[in-house]
Structure formats: C-alpha cells, structure tokens
Image 1 (spheres, rainbow, N blue to C red):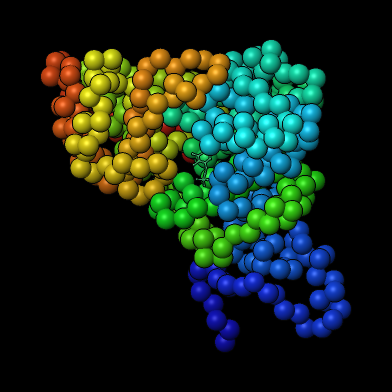
Image 2: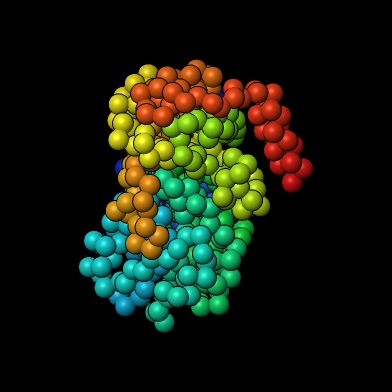
Amino acid sequence: MEFRSLSPALHRASTIVYPDVKSFMARHEAFYDGYSYALYGHPASRELEARIAELEGGARAVAVPSGLAAIALVQLTFLRPGDQVLLPDTIYGPARQMSRQLLAGLDVETGFYDPVDPESVRRVASPSLRLIWAESPGSFTMEVQDIPRIVAIARDIGALVAVDNTWASPLHHKPLSMGADISVQAISKHVAGHGDLILGAAVARAESEFRMLKDRARNLGYGVSPDDCWLALRGLETLEIRLDRQLRSAMRIAEALSRHPAVEEVLFPPLPGDRFHDLWRRDFTGGAGVFSVVLAPAARPCMASAVERLKLFAIGASWGGTRSLVAPADPTNLRDVNPWRRGVVLRFSIGLEDPEALLRDIEQAFEALPGSQSRNHEAQDPEETASSSVDFQERNHKR
Ligand SMILES: *Cc1c(COP(=O)(O)O)cnc(C)c1O
C-alpha cells in the first residue's frame, strides 16, 4: 500500500533529478508549471501558490521570500525607466522607502495620492503612469480604499492596479474580482498565522501577468523554503477560524476602548461608527484582529509607560499571529499628502487569548494615562457585541 497522509508532502531539495537525457534537456519547459530546479518550484510551493491563487480568485500566484519581496517583485516586473507609479499615502512603510531608494535609482517616478479620495489619482497622474498601488486598509491608520473606483480610473488612464491585501487575507477581500490586476499577500501575517515565518505571494488575475512575475522572480533569484511553505499550508487550514475569533475578540476590545476616556479614536473599519465602516461592509466579507488606537492628547506623553504595563501583549512589529501584540508607531513622517497630527498610534494585533483578559490588561495599563481616571463610560453589555457579530456572520453566509 502506498503511503498516504492528510498533510501535504514535504520535499527538501535543490536538485531535481530526471530519468533520462531527453527529459533533463527539456526541463525548462516545466518552469511555469512543473519542476525544473527547486529554486523555481517544489511540491510545497506549487501547492501553496495554487491555494492562494484560488482563494484570491486569480489565475496564478508566485510565492516569494517575504511580503516586501512580493511588493518589489510587482514593481520590478511592471515598471520601466521613465514610468510613473502612484502609491497611497498610507502604504506600508518599507514599501514607501523602497520607492524612494530602489525605484528612484531606476528612474521610475513615484507619486503619492490620497487613499480616501480616488479622484486624487487623476490629479497626480502623469502621462507615463503605469501602476497604481493600493493597500486596504492602510498601514497603521486603517483607511479602507474604494478599489472598484480606483480600478475604473486606472482603466480610463490605461494603468495597472496592484493591491496589498494582507490585512483581510485572501479570504475576506477579493481585489482581483473587483478588477485589480495583482493582489499581494504578506503570508507572514494571517496565512502563516503563528508569527514564526516570513513569506509572501503575488497573485495575478491573468496568466500573462503571472508569467511576467515568474520570469522576474527568476531574474531576481527568488526562491522559497519548502518548510516555510509547508507551515503556511498548515496555517491555511485554520485561517478562517483564527480570523473569525480574532475579529470577534477585536470587536469586543475595540468597542470598549472607543469609550475609554484616554482614547481619542479607535481606527477599526469593522467597528460600527468607524469612518470606513460602510465601505468595509460593502467590499469585505470579514475582518481581522488588527486595529489602531489614537490616544487623547493629554494621554499621548505617557504612551510608553502605559504600553510597558501591558502583561499579555508583547511589544513587536508584525501581526496576525496567535499571540497578541502591540506596536506603537508615529505616522507623522510617513505622510506626503494628508498630514498626520495626532501623534503616536498604538496598533494592536489581537491573538487567540481570552478577549476579556486582554481587555482587562489594556484597561489596567491605560490607568497610567492622564484622563483615564475620569471613568464616565458604561461597562459594555457583552450580549450586544455578541449579537452584532452574529448578525455580521449571518449576512456573510447569505452571500
Ligand atoms: C508586513 C507587511 C508587509 C511585508 O511583509 P513581510 O513578509 O514582513 O516582508 C507588506 N504589507 C503589509 C500590509 C504588511 O503588513
């Protein structure tokens, strides 16, 4: 009897071997689809690519060493000297840096547009515009972008659209079905889901764009580890239940924090009342446990002491894992179009711990903040949050 198990095969390899000279000499034909050299694909990477592409609703995916590598791959595939690329003002910080350092040196012009005003694309577009980037919601400040409108403008101008779809994961937001050409994932975040690997993917809506991406990945020597792909495949098995639990917990915590006297605003599109809630409901089928908190002005100088009082949240970048994290960040120097004047934001990534314990932890930590003593807010009724999140799920099951 052949060996069978429920988990995918894991083959570590550099060399792939052939039964005869003819098949060895023809190995390059397997570059896009099969196995020619482990740098270009092995069973775990092909399986991961197939599943991510299917979830995103794209033709094909290319797995690459990181989310940032996926961003670089898309830009280096589609941009030529003299082209213009437009980035949302809220783009992931290292990608903003990439445009200034890498693309500027290649004579690609970068422009920034207002992520919440798609028409601003037309104002900054030059005749050489080639690629419009989007990231929704935006890093740290959580602005949801109107992807269908951006796609319509791009079609008008004749530009490609690429979307960083990391926050919602390939499960809960489908930019390719809204007409975007490329969707990018930092698999390191929700898909991997355990804070223990770095991997990315670029998914193309059409086979032709996939082939361009795959060719460029070869030029760059991008390969991915079978072990990391295998772990990401395992992550996919629990993606939906993790995201669901993290969203429910984050709703409970964000709702309570939005009424905390030391908090000016919670930035979290799934929260009713958030500036981007309606757009999020229209275009997303679910969420994640990642949100940001803007502290009240009086509380801002004491941010560090409050964060350091947290016991259940580790201080760290990244998000989407099983353990809760907090990352303070100051967007002030990361904005070209819309100045940010509200100081440091605290980005929380809610893990799989007990949400009531997490909320109590934040509340005890925020007691260090001036203003938190004026506790005039009512305790949240847990029934209310539970039922609104159930409504949300019922709505999505009907879709
Ligand atoms: C983390 C992140 C990336 C980069 O992913 P890495 O795998 O860490 O390189 C890209 N985009 C967004 C929105 C991210 O949060």
